[in-house]
Image (cartoon, rainbow, N blue to C red; front, side):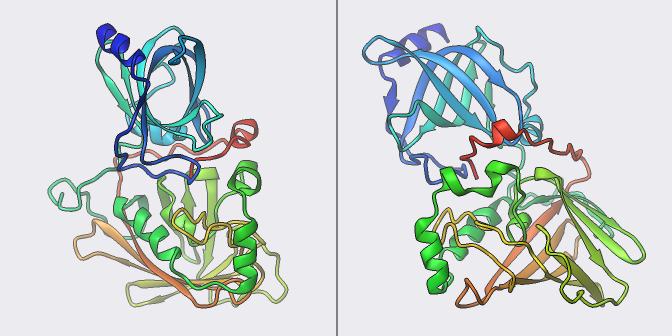
Length: 341
């Protein structure tokens, strides 16, 4: 490892294809840095963990890099702990750099320790789609669920193609993820993005309500099943007001009364920063796959103020009773440095 570090000091910037990680537009996904150096700080916090590494640049000067990675629950399920690295450790980081080359800031891909062990970001849920042997099977919607990996990219690619109104286009053109992202204030993403947040989901079924919680920002939705209508002039909230009904084994959920949100869908592949407002309505249909391993979710979003056409999609969650929902205490100071989607 020490020989590897010494060689890497001589070739700090390495152009390599970066695949398999979801990143904000501010990172250069076509370039990977090899950053050997010494850990100076390890900030184990939500919504993003930061690793600070002192390395030597090509001019021979000591430089500290800020390496950004995932939230505590995702890292914990990927094999990390608060003690995984400590100040003084010698490591080799592979990371995608900030497009602003004036910032010593990058998004972690892998971290190799002096003993040769490798820690990866967001590695626990990279389930193979043809893995049918080890999949747990549910008999109802109740329990813990994780996002099907492929759906994340599909969702944002489809969103980038949706027609938006002139007002939506103007807001998108003005959007600056560094300054305007609600996540920087620990504000959860509403529907439909909450469906593809790569964190665990927990469902509780009661006689007259269903509660769905997403681990990120501890977002919680209450779906009323007692036949009520949406309240007239009701309170508008982050996750809206949801009423549901059963159509056989399918749960149909109609959610309205969302509070205004500056960027409910980040727009990693287009249409970034399109807001949502008072007219937004989301209809979801939930059903269990035949083998009970997945929850199948179809959704449609209507918002005449910002969308020129409905946005529809399909998402699947794997049944994951082997994982523990950890919750998410968002650190506002940490969150204000938000860049990773």
